[in-house]
Structure formats: C-alpha cells, structure tokens
Amino acid sequence: MEINNISFSYSGKIKTLHDVTGSIELGKVTTIIGPNGSGKSTLLDIMSNHAVPDAGQVTLDGKVLTDFRPKELARRLAIVHQHNSAPADLTVEKLVSYGRIPHRQMFAQQSEQDAEAVEQALARTNLLGKRKASIAALSGGEKQRVWIAVALAQSTPYLFLDEPTTYLDIYYQYEVLELVKSLNEQHGMTIVMVLHDMNQSIRYSDCIIAMKNGRILAMGAPQDVITAETVKSLYGVEVIIKNDADAGMYMVPIGLS
Ligand code: ADP
Ligand code: MG
Image (tube, rainbow, N blue to C red; front, side, top):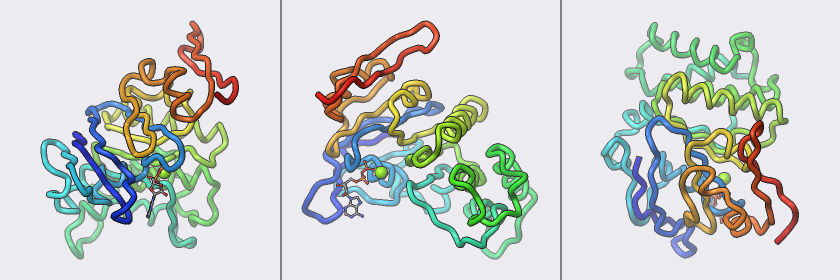
C-alpha cells in the first residue's frame, strides 16, 4: 500500500493531515504511534476508504483506493475501529458471521465457505466456547477479540486495528498482540495497528510510523524510530533507550523534558 501526499481536513478549515507520504510493506506488521489527536485514526480511515483525502491518494495493490467497489475492497482489507458497538443481545456467532457479507451474493444463504471462515475466526480468537454468548455478557478482552474475529471472518490479506489494546489489562493486551503476531507469521497477513505503548510497539512491529500534528515525524525500523529525540519531540517525555541481552531493546521514561 502506497500513501502519497495525503492532505485532509474535517471542517475544510483546520488541516488534520498535512502531506502524509509513506508505504505499508506487504507481509509486515506496521504500528502507528503518536499523541492523542495527531491523526492516527484519520490516517487509518483514509487508508481504508472510510474518508476521502482532499489531496493525494492511497493505492492498494497498484489501484487507487477510491476506485475500488466497496465489496471488492472489503475482500482485501478489514478494519477494527477504535470504538465499536453492536446490539447487546446479538450472539458472538451471529456478529462474526456479518464479517462474511462482502463475500456473499445478494440474498444468498451462508455457504460452506462462509461457515468455515466463521469457525476459523472463532477458533483463532479463542472464542469457540463463547459462540452462543450475547455481546453484552462478554468481558472487555473478549469483546475486543470478537471485533477482531469479525474482521478475520472477512478473510482479507490486510488487517487494520485501531488501538486494539486500549482499556485491556496487561494479560489481554498481550493476548491481542500475540494474536496479531501469529496472524502475521502463520497466515501472512499484513497488519497495521495503532498502539500507545512504545515497548509493545518495539517488540511487535517490523515498522513504526510516528505521527505528530498530522504529519509523519519518523518512519522505519523500531530501533531507528524509537530514539530519545523522537520520543521527546512526540510526547515531551525524557526517556532512556536500553538494549539488553534478555529483553532486547526497550525504553524507560525518566520524566518530563
Ligand atoms: P488520533 O487517532 O491520533 O488520536 P484523530 O485522527 O482521531 O487522532 O484526530 C485528529 C484530529 O482530527 C484531532 O484534532 C481531532 O479532534 C480531529 N477530528 C477527529 N475526528 C473528527 C471529526 N469527526 N470531526 C472533526 N474533527 C475531527
Ligand atoms: Mg485514534
């Protein structure tokens, strides 16, 4: 996916994205970091054709995103938004089956392939035992897994996740991150996610995009992007970057700059 000179504003006045250019490498995990309001979700919306840029374009497999028919794009790219809601009495199984809509002909019944994709999505997210549960009866971690399962049922090569770990306790955060890792390593999915935890970003990403005020401040391998200078510029926090034989590279905040 190529992102070329994207500018975007919600109101027509204040620019939310300024001339953003970058690329998402196939088969890799890319993480977008940056302060609240820096434009991460807006960029993901443009990269999934939920918002149309004022200038510039995004291409997916060589084709401009806005030229895709909705169903055609939904067979290639699934996104889990930051905030999601579903009717509380809907069952897990039913909600996950909605992920198959882009693959169905109008008025067609669920095919064998649809059923299999739903089973696989439930299995990979460890939700087989919860299939008959209603959404309202789930914990935060389970709900997050259900939304990921809906996206997986879509059977797309690209998966975008906007803050998939926010509001989860540390166990469930790592459960989501390990799921992302296995989807990437074992199923070859190209993943783009937004994370706030920089140590998690370092550990789970091939590439990090750092955003500030609607611009890309740095982009590249974790060790090149997560520097004391970049973190200070992004968040105004002083950090020390460490490298340890057991822990690998990590970052320790030591105060405000
Ligand atoms: P992030 O995901 O990095 O926190 P967003 O992309 O959500 O940032 O927001 C970037 C900027 O755009 C913020 O200043 C935010 O207030 C503004 N913004 C986001 N969504 C809307 C909207 N629907 N209408 C108007 N402004 C918005
Ligand atoms: Mg956001």
